[in-house]
Image (cartoon, rainbow, N blue to C red; front, side, top):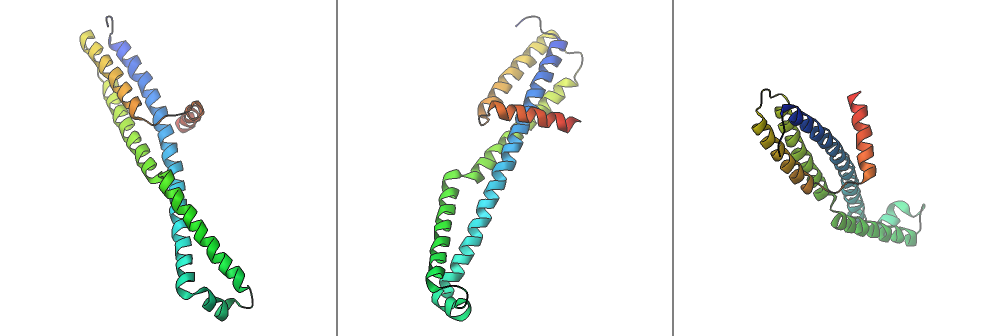
Length: 173
């Protein structure tokens, strides 16, 4: 690598900064989405569990006899209990298979790593009077660091990249 000067370093810093901001926006959106669905799944599991526990401990027949005999038949109430147990089973399977909490942590770690990379880029962007040899070393380190950061990130689609770029443009306005 010959011929790198401070202007080429600043250009590389600017390019990597833009890419890192887009990647951070993508990870932020993925974190928001996975956290939302994780919370929905957790709260629904707790609510269904409480309802099934109440029906089970109180007793379907007792509930029917004391409160619901005028509104619903015993068979339907039994079916309702079975249905809620089935929903609880589905919610439990979804929690085990989707691992939304763990996915949220992966996205959060990616955001932290990208923010650290952006901080490094900001530090380099304000430096002045860097000799060409040092610029060359900085560019080599930036290339390696960008490859490393990019390799640990979860995969992104082209549509996610386009959406993130649009979102960044909206944020900057």
